[in-house]
Length: 274
Image 1: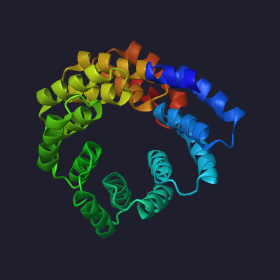
Image 2 (image 1 turned 180 degrees about the vertical axis):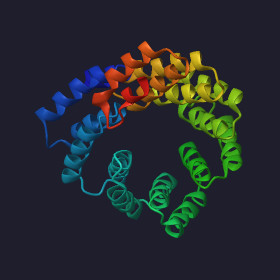
Image 3 (image 1 turned 90 degrees about the vertical axis):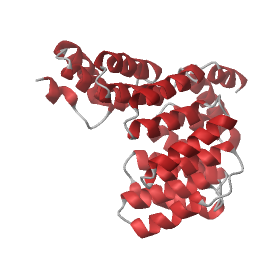
C-alpha cells in the first residue's frame, strides 16, 4: 500500500495500480484498500474494472456519496445514462449540499431530455455555499452546462486569484475560454495547467483540440501524442490524432494510429484512412 501511494505521487499510476491491486486482493474486506484500487483504476480510465471495484466497496460501505458519484461518472462515460442518474441521485440524497453532485445529476438529466428536472439541480448547484475552491469550480461547470460561459469564466478567474496553483482550475478555465473561441488565451491556460500537472491526458487532449480549432495542426498532433503517452488506453486522443493527421494528408501515420485504436472502442477510424 505504501509503495503504491509513493508511485502514484511520483506520477507512475500504471505501476501503482499493480500494488494497489495486490493490496486489495490480500484484504478484500478492507474498504480503504478496495477504494484505493478503484480510485487508481478510475484515474487510468479503466472504467469497467473501476466499476467492479467501486461496487465491491459499496458492499462494505453502502452509503458513500463520493463512491456513488464516481459510479455515476463511470456509467455516464459508458453511456448508461439511466444508471448514472440513479447513482448521482443516491449520492445527492446523501450530500444535497454538494454542488458537484447536483451539477452531475443535472447534466445527466439534461442529456436525457429532462430539462425541467435538470434545471432544479443546476439551481441547487449554483446556489450552494462556496465552502472550498472545488465548490466554485463545480459551480463554474454548472454555468457551462447552462450555456452561461461568461459567468463561468468570471468565476474561474476569481477562483484562480485565490488558488493560482491548481491545475484542474486552470484546465476548466481553459475549457471555458476555448468554448468561446478565445483560443490564444485558452492555449496559455492549458499550458499553465500542464506546467502544474504535466501527466494529465485530458488536458493534453483538450489542448490538442484547441490547437486544432486554431488550425495549428502540427501542434495539435504533438499534443494528442502527449495525451496518448500519458494514458495509452484513452480513446479520444487516438481518434483525434487520426483525424488531425488526415487533415494534413499524413495518411500512413494516420493509418498506424488507426490500426492501434480499433481495440479501444466502437469507433473505427480506419474508414477515414481509405
